[in-house]
Image (cartoon, rainbow, N blue to C red; front, side, top):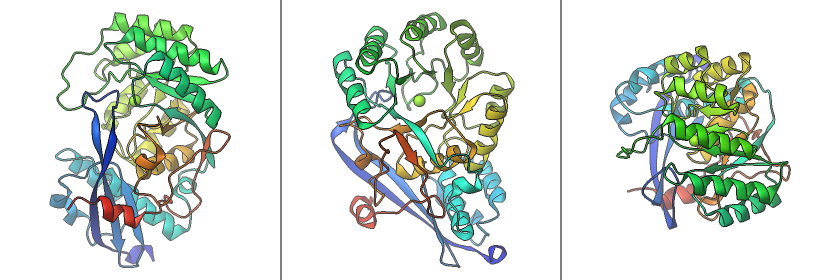
Length: 373
Ligand SMILES: [Mg+2]
């Protein structure tokens, strides 16, 4: 069957969900009044349809001909082709997700099973997106704990270090010691147009030392990607786990990080950075070196599922990112294109969907309602 399957159509649906009230992402100088998602559907002559999402896929029309008529099961060919396009254009990894969704359906298996099947459910952390006052963050932490979460991530603004550390301290007071708290400084990459300099090494080191006293599980992206020596020195000098790499979209750069042992935790997003197959290889390399891989997932429900299958497949962890910071960021907003938002279990885990493929069931009414015309 596989040898004769052909891609007949690649459909892109561009969606824009209104956000009222807006979502004030800590890493974006501009509050978000809408949330965009591009849904990729790869149709085949066998009637199987694969779904992906994540990157915007802007500019894909010029490259579509490289995939039409091809066999979706020749996955490495497609990964290599997407890599050649990425040099000129966007990060068309949602297309690879749709191909894996097809491969899963052809084989009758969830993609995580094809990727190693190490975990059937993953422990998650609530990845908070907004900056909140210490009092508000303490309340939010307590609410998360009551909902079953055993871990959370708090953002600290580079211009409000004292207030940020105070918010982490307030959250720690609220939830006690038996709860993992991660901190993200968002210093490694920038929204377009944000040219403010990153914090210098000394201020970052002093901040990480203060966070160490609060028992922080990891500190994420404390320095720019270009300062890999600084990242490595931070690990050595503070003894705190350093995480990063969510947007490192060059496989050779990630390999260089791994060779130089820059990070404790590698986080390449499979729909924004390196794709599913490469993330599997690099994540396994990290694991084989006794380092961790747990991907960034901050796109939408489909991107979350793609990352979940890779992470669960290779035994990523120890915690998986679950973007959640109500009321600003909720499963209903994040997964608005899915028939059922992805929920956590009472034990603070997310189960890998057992449907063949990536297990995304689309809400066609929502897609029609929010499609950009
Ligand atoms: Mg991050």
